[in-house]
Every structure is written in structure tokens, then in C-alpha cells.
Length: 205
Image 1 (cartoon, rainbow, N blue to C red):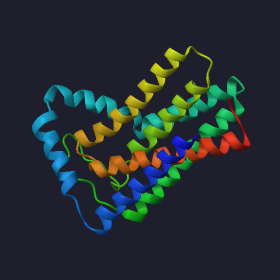
Image 2 (spheres, helix red, strand yellow):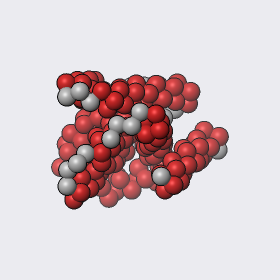
Image 3 (cartoon, helix red, strand yellow):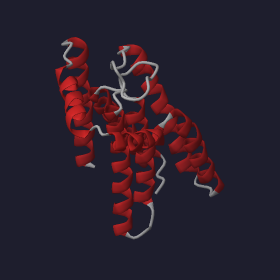
Image 4 (cartoon, rainbow, N blue to C red):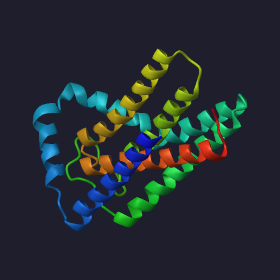
């Protein structure tokens, strides 16, 4: 628990630091350097199709289907507290993303790799929501009674998937790297606070 509190404190500090650099100091050099690194070292025609598939694992269409299905499955098997947790995680995440985008109003990066995106850029909704959704699944895996080795593997896989979705947004140049980093910080902080609240008030595992 102490480590978790330390990590969420670090996430909040990093989120505040990004806001300071991008919106107060007007610094974008690091973002542009990372874009250039991707352009010269990572972007390949064969990899682009894969990155589009990865980014779609947290697209608005996917989220609109995946969250209700997960809640429905939990309700069918009478995991009512987990269903409530999932509902609050999703709704709270959407509210936080919407408020942040309206508050900061950061334009999208120029010259997207494959397709333009609409809406504001900061923070990355894909990064934020992928951490909330796949982090919720990882938390439920942690609470399960499956063998520890399988549990750790599944949790690692889910977190790696979330990280890959964030990287895909940078690769496709539809978000600045700082948008993605801020999204992960926001998603992690919200998920941690929700886990902490449920553990105190309504234990679900």
C-alpha cells in the first residue's frame, strides 16, 4: 500500500509537471524529438497496420461495447460490487478525460501518419481509458484465485497491452507523447483512488 501511494503521488506530480511544461512554459521540444525518433527509427510500413489494430483495442467503438459487456457479465454472475466498480471506473474516466480536454484545449499534432483525429489532444483518451479498462481487468485477475504464475502473466500482459495502445497513439502521430504520458498518469490515479475507496468501504475480493 505504501508503494502504491508513492506511485500515485508520483503520477500526480508527473501530470502536474507536464501541464507546467506544455501549457505554462510552452515547451514542445521533447515531444518533437520523440516524434523524430519514431520517424527515423521505428515507423515502417509493415508495422503501421499493426499499430492501427492495436490502437483500435481502445477506440470509442471498442469502449462502448467492451465496458457494457464486462458489466453485464459481472452482473450475470452476481459480482455486483465488481460491476459497480467497473461502471464507476468507466464513467469517472470519461468525465475526467472530457473535463481535461475542454480545460486545456490542446490542438492535435500536425501531419498524422494515417488518418486525422478530431477533438482536443490533451490528455490522450486512449491512454487514459486503456489504463482504466485493462487496469480494471488486471485488478480483477489479482483478486482471483488462479495460480500465481498465471495471475502475474495475465496482469503483465494486460498492462503491456495498455502501454502498447499509448505507444500506438504516438506512432500514428495523433497524440503528442506528453498527451500519452499524462493520460497514463490520469488513468492510474483514478483507478488507484477507486481501488482504495472500494477496499475501505466495499471490499470486492
